[in-house]
Length: 172
Image (cartoon, rainbow, N blue to C red; front, side, top):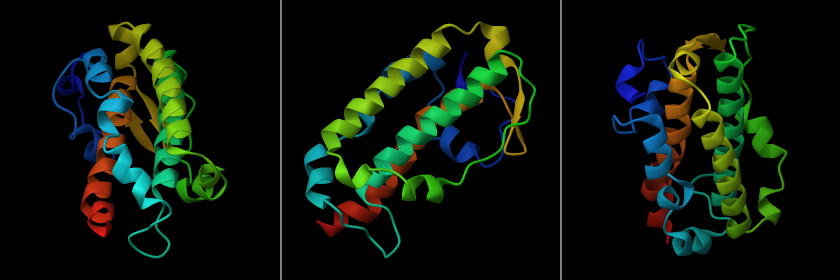
């Protein structure tokens, strides 16, 4: 199923979904693989612990956040695809970010984890039929389908790479 099959477009999440072209979700996982989205590793590495403003995350913090977010969105997609109608809460990204070991990890290590998480996500979505991927559940008081969550998973790293290019790379 394609991005254009998401109807209605979930508020808030549309900012990520709309960054992805209108292609089949499984094609999207191939086109927007971690190594194709998180590029300029040398520049990212050169930034080290630089932040563009006090209180903002480092590159490693951002990458850990992307990984954590994918796990959460995939979990939601799993629950909703299996027709679990239990409303799921949101999460506090700043609390998660403050309680990681990202600062002690290398970019290569984080990229390896991102790739492993993505492979698991792809396998989850490969095993959903049209009925499963089209079901709706409630996450953070928003009705959303596994299909929409899949496109959130694809668009979220694109959003953060845009921020990195606009706000971090000029600091080099």
